[in-house]
Each structure stands twice: as C-alpha cells, then as structure tokens.
Image (cartoon, rainbow, N blue to C red; front, top):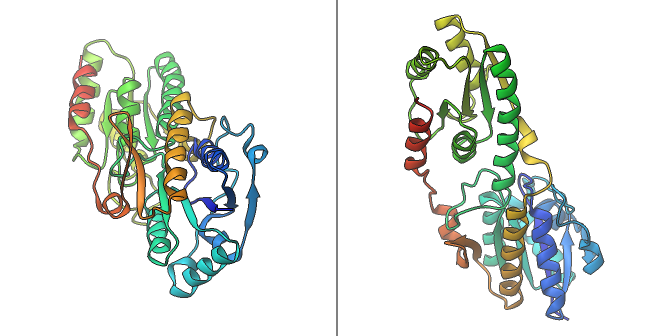
Length: 329
C-alpha cells in the first residue's frame, strides 16, 4: 500500500490540525496509508513516526496548535542529518511527504525532493508572508485574536482617556498589524514595509483630541525597526515613551506576543486548511514534489516551491492609505 508522511514545522498556526486531518482522510479515501512525523524535521531524523488513521484525526478540526508538535532542527541542515531522515523515510515505506509550515519548512521540503522523496508544501503561518498564496493558514484566526484584544483595550482606553500602544507579531511583515489595525479602527499603524514618523503619530493624536477624541489606539508590528538589536526595550515601549515624554499623555503598552498563535481556528482557516491539505495529499499520492499549494482568487493552485521561497509578498499600500483616511477624522 502506498504511504505518505505528514509533518508540521516552524511556528504553530491555528488550522494546522485541520490540514493534517485533510491530508490523512484524503489519503485514506484513495486507499493509501499515512504516517505522522512528530516534532517536524527533528522527528524525521530521530524516527518519531506514528501511524495515522481516521480516528487519529477525529475531533481536531477545531483545535489550535498541532497534534504532531513542532520543533527546530539544526541537524537537518547538515548533509548527514538529511541523509538520516531520508533513510528513515525509506525504511518506513514512506514514498512522499506533505510539509505544513512556512518558508523554512519549505526549504526542508525542497531538500527532501532533491534527495528523491517528493514533498509538497502547505503554507501555514500567522504572518501571512508566504508568496504564491493570497492567505496562509492561521492568518485569519490571528488577526481576529488581535481584533478581539483591540476591542477590549479600547473599552478601557475610552473609560480612562488613555493612549494604548499595541504590539503585534510580524518581524519582517506587517500583515497582522495592517489588517487588524484597519479592522480594529486603530488611529495609527506602524509596519516594517512603510517608513514611519513618530512626530506624525503624535500629531494625529493631538489632532484627534482637538476634534474631541479622548483616546487612541496605535498598532505596531514588532519588526518595525528591523531585527532586534539586543535592547531590552521593545519598539512599542519606545513609541509609548516618545508620546508620553513629548506630550505628557497617559500611555499604556500592550504586547500581545504568543497569544496570537493560539486559539480555535476560525471557520475560514478550517476551510482553507481543509482545501489546501486535500490538494497537497493528492499531489503527494501522485509522486509530485517540489510544489506548494496556495489559494489565489479563491482557487487552489500548485506552485513551484522555489518560487514560493524566493518570492516576495508585498503589502497592499491601498490598505494602509485606507486605514489612515478612515482614522483621521
């Protein structure tokens, strides 16, 4: 019987379990077997394999995280580590792989394909920064988590007439900050892709107060100032300190952190993960590797993994302009 493997790698994203479920049940419907590899590429090297059946993936479509767990593997980056992984796959009778994760995971999938084990990538990252797909698994849930936080913060910001700086994830990408900031009605949004001016942020606060607005929400992506320099103070803390010292405003800083990774996936993420996982399993069963499945204009398509890894997914600056326009009055 044909057997394919499935693993999750990199940062967890809500909807990964739904994708695993789709891979398993699609393969079973085609008369194939499925092996789950626990702890990503680390598990490939150490033989952490578990047979999956229909019951193994029952009641997981609604769960966040990943039942297969995730871990980093420096060993897989070495020729010896990759060779050991491939040997383990062959011994287990696994002829192809489905790899669920981000660009780092896709590099691993490319390595497996080059070594004779066809691998298909499924984009799952809350950052939504993977090229060749309009949306990645986990993004919709993450922005809804942030919006829920902004809604709650705005209640107390209004009550106490305060300014809140909310830091969200996104070291190199501002998708979470931009989408959640727009949907949450933030007065200012700072993202890595667009240069910002703290004086302009301050002036928007002043102008808002002149119009009778007694509170403000500023959403900041964690990577606005580039990679961390070793300073203990986060970008949100620096923004908050500037506003406090410049105008004497009462400012509070909230860093949502890994809260954004957890929670039950939204209906959209469950459906997206099911569609992508289904397509990935069909490709793997055909022995097709070096591909990533993505959604473009609501159609599931297959793209070269190399294109997905090397491509750049740009922010829609019209969204940014729209957010500024709607929060300026």
